[in-house]
Image (tube, rainbow, N blue to C red; front, side, top):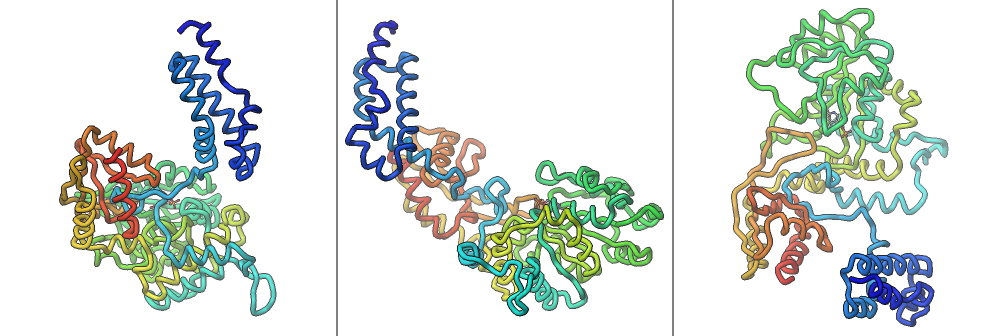
Length: 473
Ligand SMILES: *Cc1c(COP(=O)(O)O)cnc(C)c1O
């Protein structure tokens, strides 16, 4: 297009002030304020100018764009004022999806956050004595109850909470082994979830890594031979996200406990997942339980609040009272501690365990969901959305735990295979992602796959609406 013609089109654009004086925008300004509407108007006009510059608008199209300016500004504003962090439907079948926020919280946890966050609370206030209290007491109390119920052998355990399990390991190592050596098997020098690496955290903690054994085999004698006057700690790390099979050996936990006791050294175990419930009933084997480790005599365990435990993001340290007192007194703890929202969510989640109300915890409910129930929901959804444009088939498949937990466990599920006329699988997945309620799916072998295991039952209807809208577009 000639520059003369372009100049003519530019001249048709109203000035921002002029636009803001138009009666059509008055209600929007009254509602959202002049500043926000001005910003939106500028953005919309800039976009039109850009389109003219690129030669994408002729005279008629410019007229059309001008006639729709008010609604474009309103759309722009709505977009700008919308939260960036939004809830999505996780139809991937990955239960603890790190990119999707790991564990959705129990209703009771959300309610407890709401009631304690919207008012003052006794976060650090002892209501009985009227004095300053400790924020850990809220979680410590419940954890003790769990131990009484399920690991009576473990006594005198106290619990503190930090920002995540990486922080828990850092605090544990710094408190127990700074300036001395921490002994770890070479088969346990793991990297988990990108950027959590045992050797790196060890270096940051000021402890010196003393590797023993080999990648596949480490014996108790390897640990024993490495113990010297420099040793401060024996560390065991759960492999969480990978397996070593074949010619392997790891000393039983009891042997490590005995060795630590003999040398009066603390034994810390980084469990990662934080299973507080025996998951073998749902086919998840070999996942070490927090209570089992403490019952077996491990001095300190560290684990995540939002992996198998199913609570908020947090790192939890439970262990021998005298060692935990040292953690509490460490200034690092002050830097790593969590706020009242996390305590509220964690307290409500732990209370569900104390009450043995495991179905209150969404991730446990998802793990316990049978294939039959998922198939029933998948059939109902297929029935609703099957149209000439949308093809739906039911397939056998597997859900996974995710979040770097139970790498070998897969749960049998029923998948919905989706196809939409005129869209490739990638395009359909993108439409789903960009819908009003974003839906995240798997794309495998050119097919969109939905696993309802991780879709909350009350979201089935929303999901159907999203699919029908895409098909109708
Ligand atoms: C997941 C995991 C971590 C890191 O926990 P975050 O809560 O993600 O910080 C550390 N150690 C092990 C063994 C883990 O499984």
